[in-house]
Image 1 (tube, rainbow, N blue to C red):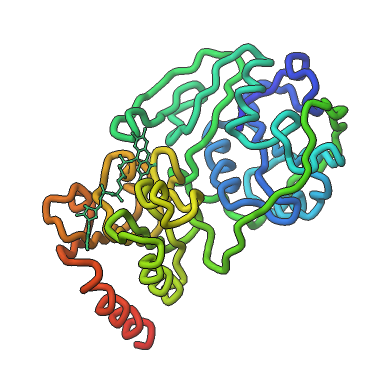
Image 2: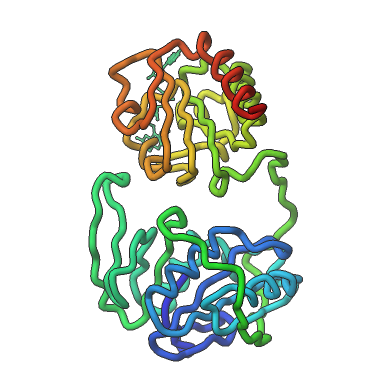
Length: 316
Ligand SMILES: Cc1cc2nc3c(=O)[nH]c(=O)nc-3n(C[C@H](O)[C@H](O)[C@H](O)COP(=O)(O)OP(=O)(O)OC[C@H]3O[C@@H](n4cnc5c(N)ncnc54)[C@H](O)[C@@H]3O)c2cc1C
């Protein structure tokens, strides 16, 4: 997401608004559906002040533009539809971690990553030291390029919006890379970063098979399943379940950490959860320092009782 765009400096990106004190938000979507985090980025953009414009680029993204039209606070939607966005390659458009450094380089400005608060048009708060300290930074660049930590902002309301839509030209393919195919993990469980309840497991689970305990619990609660890096590195669960500094950042209503010690790198990804429950047999485990409720127990003994308690709660 970046505030105020200078068209001359932006080279091959589509023709974009050049007003000062306006914010251009890059929409994340899959051509069908807007990702929930995009609504949070709109809230952050509104706090910066000025007009908020959305760029929706994709192969067939009219549906997404329609969804955004209803979002409060968006003045205009720029729609760029072209086959060159197939696979949403960063060279042309996508993936904020890949795209924004490219935009910053083109504009010769710095990127501010992962802001958690907007103090004013040029002053932002971001986390440092794996989320253990907050830095308030003033950005003197004329064009400010920044990414937003989704868990720190409420989603913009999808009602009463009336944004105008404008079709914009697309760049010619750069020819540097070509999208061939993608394999996405299919799951009936909610997506980790937007789930209201997350059940996460760590090395304490001891094997991938034992994660079944968590999958059963998650399915009863309609929860997503996460993991510590140690569990991922041990091959118990796939990489995309990792929560933490180098994984996903989550802030659900309820986070249940099972057999996770609570290293700072893990806490960096979940400590903003509303309620944290920890199950660990070691009373000294650091996870208990952030937990609202802690069970000092062997997880293999306690899991059946937790499961029963959840079923009773659901049936009541
Ligand atoms: C640069 C860097 C980035 C990192 N990024 C991440 C990240 O994004 N996410 C992340 O998670 N980690 C990350 N790490 C790794 C992190 O430092 C820890 O090593 C990791 O989080 C530990 O995972 P764990 O808690 O599952 O394992 P452990 O530290 O081994 O803890 C296992 C816990 O399970 C408990 N336990 C064992 N058996 C049982 C039982 N039967 N019943 C109940 N409890 C039991 C133990 O008491 C222990 O507390 C990063 C590290 C570095 C250096």
